[in-house]
Length: 263
Image (cartoon, rainbow, N blue to C red; front, side):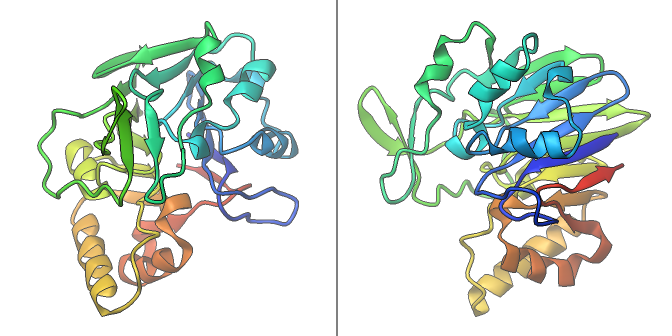
């Protein structure tokens, strides 16, 4: 399997654009998948520089309903004339960060007949399945980080029910893709027990003071307790990644705009 990072907060070389967002192009033996599209159209420019033809994507997936993962989808729909875009049914709700800023999906996407709403478990192809895991038991509490969702005009603490995960099973191995892991990276790893996991850990808000280091150390120990290799970036935070890397060694790797991983 080949995974090309089309967009991330940092770049592995100066010719690639970087922005607060995530986009991955996944090439399996049977199917090509666009997983998220960054916060703007720039992911498509990086794709051209990397020799990735977005027109060859068989399907596209939005991991959750935030702008930094959905911002380039309209451009993708222009470049690719066939692929359905799988979006969890609650992704078009209004989502806000701790400052009250709207961080939701562009409502214009609703008008596309290529949008396919999902919920629960959905098989997209042989060995390719989407999950929301909304009913799964958590071994760690949900952290809202001050985010809210508006339902029936009422602001409520975010529950991230719009977040979904892609599991690809190939050659006896399990590959999991998560956008920001808002339901908790430890919960998600525990639910799936993948061989390889690509996704953000959402640790960027964790300070590196004594309490923060204790939190990250405990998280590193727990994640290393699973038989999983992790590729992360975006909302994990660069400083937080560097701290985790000291603890996790070759179990943890960083992906940046322009990086290509074959696993």
